[in-house]
Length: 133
Image 1 (tube, rainbow, N blue to C red):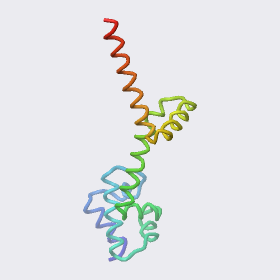
Image 2: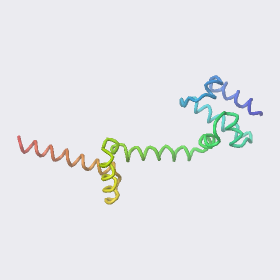
Image 3: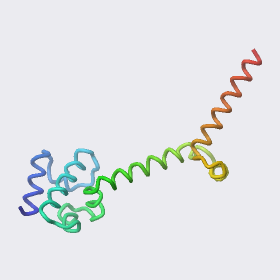
């Protein structure tokens, strides 16, 4: 089966137009259609570079589409980074550096360290209010 036939069949199955399929949108239903098409093209014997050229995507995008482990690693990497650094973004840069350095010394993540400090501070405030009452 030629690559154009495979692309047309994918468009038909997913009920999307070529403009959306070849466009820049990252809507989940479009990404799913592109991934499906890449799998079909690979099954037909086309190389990553060829698939990328047919689908107007880079070969690295095609590699990402065809490798579920890579997608999982990328998602977990960014989720982990966001969790570790999310709380730090609220702090001034010079304080961020202190927190990161201290967390390394304590062998915990900066997020866990900030969470501990917040919990300790909240407990201190609660104790102070109880004592004042």
